[in-house]
Image 1 (cartoon, rainbow, N blue to C red):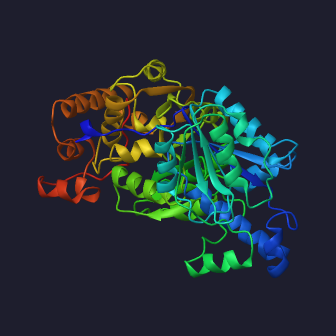
Image 2: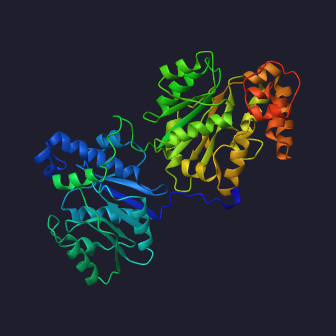
Image 3: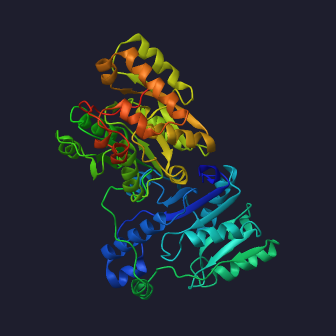
Length: 474
């Protein structure tokens, strides 16, 4: 099934520039503010921008081009770190557009589209049409009802497009088309849409259903990352894991997906700042539930982390560097154990290399959400759900190794014995790769598979010892 999957990824060929002002009362939507007041006009502006950013298609490199130039911290606090940021600089709009387009092309882009944040009908389909138009035209324009444009795209640098234009007039579009004709540039136009500038425009927008309400303060409209932590009876570890995750990735939502814990796991996770998702137990099923919750935030990246795994102290920096790479789709951390056993240390050392025998879920799986969804997500397996997801990744893209190690609990090795546990892991993995079903292997690996995967119980019988918590390790 996965052989036909195409993984969308951020291409340096496509760049979307979003021209915005800092949402300060008295400086945004001033015509609207004359009728509704500064506070309400600012609220509407924020809602329009947030709706616009949420509507941007996955797989586009996005840059917030902001003003005033000293408001980057303010803009990042509002919109989050999922985007690049660049100040607009001084001079008129034409000069600012010229600088931003020139920088994008200098950075390797081959198609650059600029938009604002106040056109509520500008959606994914419209942006896709603009991109397609640039395959056959030098310039694409989205005409606005007021005589300007809500979108402009170029496939090569053409500063003359922005020259000698009266930017506050009703002739912006007509003059721009004239400049394109003078320069011999082929143009295409999209469907006319309306920017929201005054009360009449806002009322028409409301009649069509308005825009989304402003999200919770300090929550990014589309966070760069969301963390998913499946848990079952993890009271001993969950508070530290969540707290550390939130410290490393401030502002990123952390979802703890509980499979029916009765030891206080949920209360501890919630107290540490996690959002709780209830799920049928089973790590594959729990990861799927967490990914669905994370998708609702619009997060572009997912980090799946075991409840007894601690992130390295530089995890935030390491992840930020990785997800900024255009070719990046998936990676795992390297592994270390919270034990001094030499054999475990040797096994952990090999996790810097990629193979089906050295990459597992307890290393943390960082994956672009569009890639995760294209691959069908975690399979609903009772065992080796991580192995299967990573196998699918390898078929379609490179699985990278992050240059930092997580620390995971060695409790299972300490309980069963290091060599005995590792031999069991290897034997079951080989059987899985040979075609044995995950349900059959789960019945061997952990007692009472019915507690985790009811279908497995239909094919197994006989008494089972007490159940222990699952782990798929080296």
